[in-house]
View 1 (cartoon, one colour):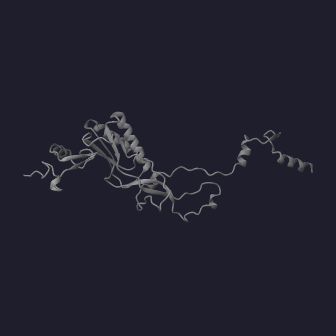
View 2 (cartoon, one colour; view 1 turned 30 degrees about the vertical axis):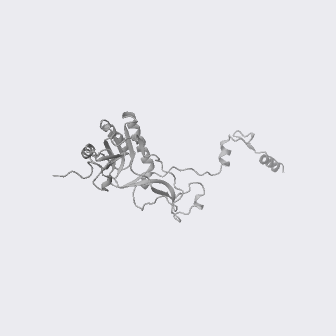
View 3 (tube, rainbow, N blue to C red; view 1 turned 90 degrees about the vertical axis):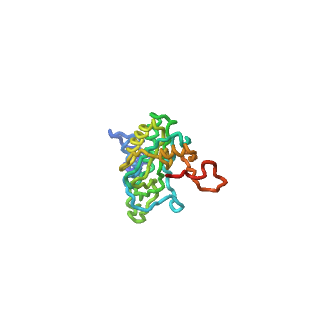
Length: 264
């Protein structure tokens, strides 16, 4: 009875033997007791790499009332720099063109935008360029999460009900599609090309840097734009321009804009 009474007292008062064999109170700093009392924890895993979603193999899956709970894309700004500058301010334009058919994550788009903006701000000036991201991450990526804690085998169902939950977003790009565009003055053309070269390292696959023959972000070539500008047939429309043709009611036509010049 004496031994049983002593054991009950030890359990009641949380008294344990230390490493030297002496009686001592239970301490939270004892690593052995802390390990025994700790419950199995669920370890937080990192995000799945974007290379797992690189290939375009499914239909577009945008956010809708049927696809809810989609996290916000990482990129939130698509126009950087002097986006309110007129069309006549920045004649030079260069594009970063995708040479792969793939998915580009919103994180990659944001990283490329930051890299290009940082270089242009440092070497050209924050008032000397206009950067535009030309693709938007509308495609939703899904993941079938697996538990990684102790006893997860009793909770998981494997591939039963494997339709995953939204994890992130990406942009579906094709070959020849423009990813980034920069317009600036002709004097900063080399800086714009170098900025896009640095932004290339944020994207997977292959890209090409192509200097545009157009005037800024317009659809008119530089020679045609200057010629029509001298003839008063170009009307600026923000960062773009409109060509005044010979269509429309006669009452609204202005002198010199009624008909096109005769071609010989």
